[in-house]
Image (cartoon, rainbow, N blue to C red; front, top):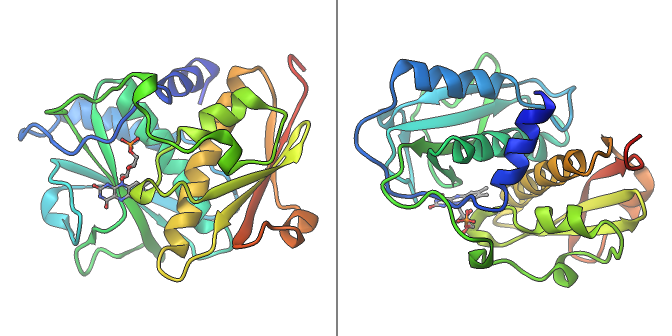
Length: 252
Ligand SMILES: Cc1cc2nc3c(=O)[nH]c(=O)nc-3n(C[C@H](O)[C@H](O)[C@H](O)COP(=O)(O)O)c2cc1C
């Protein structure tokens, strides 16, 4: 993905919203190709994990909280440590892309592909986005985001611009199940532990990390994700470690 595209995605952070009403007619083949080409160009959080995305129609998907849309973009993954956050990181780039070209999208945590489509080339289904032409506003004003204050999701005093873009990330049931610690140039990301929503909470953190990476790029900073053994041991109470972001200096 080039810098111009990542800047487009960064700008979409401040106006995107979930769309749950779609026009009946599907997108034409050229528009769908634009979406699948984009999905093939997304950057992974953990490049060692094999994933694949698959375009689906309404008959391929069922389950609770299903948003009726003409199209769905599902992600499948190898089951390796970090796969949930990696899937969230990849598909959030598609969510922002769809918003940036005026289409609507909505993450789908409840629905699943129908039986027989839950595995693909040896990979397991993780999560999907509904998308299509919106029949309700696909954008909102910045003041309309309902999110927790930065002080509730982070102990960091540095990197305010990057954390602000992160704070606005969407999450399942808007639970904002993330916490960030660290210092100048380092951000450790944690997911709230849960019996019911552990996997979704880790997907949510991947989504937030996608916003963090795009914000770093906007600031002209290099962003590398690593796993830091030390940070794993010092997780805040009730949270488990996901990943660490190392930020380069401005303009380097
Ligand atoms: C992992 C994940 C799963 C979600 N699952 C659903 C879902 O099954 N049905 C739905 O209507 N919305 C779903 N959402 C959308 C959230 O409810 C929405 O992102 C959140 O309330 C914030 O609102 P916004 O996206 O308009 O900013 C999901 C979001 C995420 C990130």
